[in-house]
Length: 428
Image (cartoon, rainbow, N blue to C red; front, top):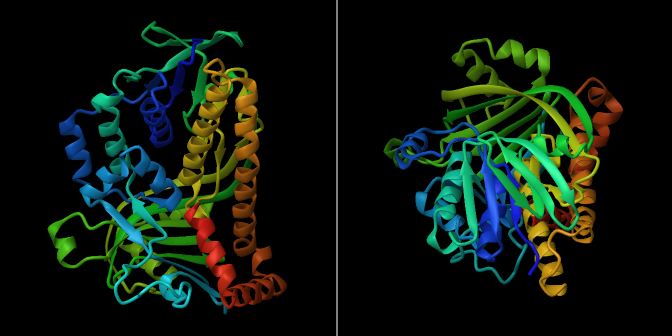
């Protein structure tokens, strides 16, 4: 049997998910992560704190995590906030969109709404909660014969040995690893992508997002909210209740991603937390009332990017190493998880079809690229177009405002189209 060893560089959520899925399929895989391994005590301390950041996991991502036994651990931790509705509205406009079961009571005549629980559209989960569940999965005995995890090491050199042998990869401690297939899952600044001389298409939005956690007067009611403001989008996303006080008065914590022009965001981040909270409440038109507490205020610049190719000989990019999108729809991680599923299915399909001879062949990788790159491009440009349609000087002109208002009002009245949008957001 020929070499079918896979080396994944980057141990974030996307890279770890791929590693676990391959190992469970009994395909030999090594995962190299530059972050030092956490002890059980370190994880306990990390998880004792609320993280302002949250991932809006689609049903497709949840299903993938279920398949590898990770979602069950997340559910047991009670550190997830399911949402059954999405509300999108614009300031000073007539348009509002409401996705979800309660927005379309007749969506499915077969559902008994008196007995059936609300149909979730997805779940908000803090990054560390997902990472911890994956870490637990990687420690399972049933994958130990196929999985090697190397933590706290960076890749310093990658030497291609030819299509029949793959790569020889050197770590900063001097170790060398040979692999038929190298997977770059090492984020936006991907070392793997640079070593493969793959160029980027980039778009700087000249915006900065302010991220924080807030406690509001009114409960979120399992609804993910997004206001389309002239300055950018403002997302209010449900957070899990983690303290006994939270659980006694549930659904009052939200994760915020507030997009602003860069100069305004950088000026605002220097103000006091109370001032930021008051400005945030006003920007949301007090949709959830006043903000009582605000925590973990941070900021990050916004830009979109996409690798001009996802593949090279014996090498493939997934997740943020391949693409990065505007956060307005919360789909960045979900696109990466779809990459994982598509790559695994194509690798396995071609390996079996070749009689266990071909692993990560050029044909396999090109098929993966054809499956994922057009879809990711469409999503990236769609998010950019939405951002352009609502934010900036041109977006505030009367013709554009009228188009937005009439468009959102018309779409909100077409129930099949609303259900289609909800299915697209779920990824299934």
